Image (tube, rainbow, N blue to C red; front, side):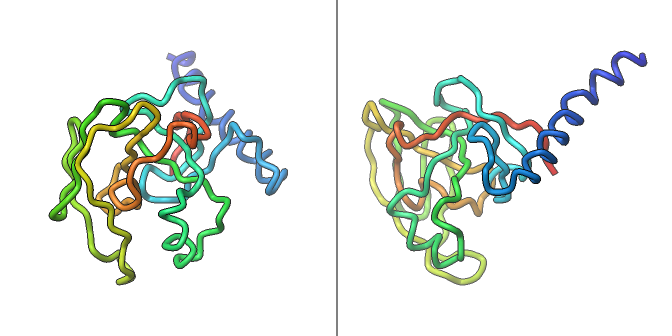
Length: 167
């Protein structure tokens, strides 16, 4: 019983220690650590893995060109990575129109405006993704993701991440 309790706490305590070290380091975070403060996926600490960007994986991307103006309007620094879940990959059909986006296994609504009343970008298309494309969706209905800025290039993914500690 004691051993199980100990094992259950090792990863979170280690993650908290790494998080503390990262806070001391400041802006010089190692690139394999990502702190997500966005509600698109659970806020917390994520570590990069060696996994490939397949459907269901969490990937970090630099802000796509089609998203920068909107994100700048929100006050988000240009170098903040976006953490999103891969909803569609090469060969998958993605359709967006009439307030709905459809991907394999998912159907999500789009909004005209965000919570602050700002107009959201619009992406409308219906097609199969090319070999080098990913379609990304957050886990929450209000997520700012590919439903607004469209597919991204696979090469734009900084890496695949896994949740270590959430708050």
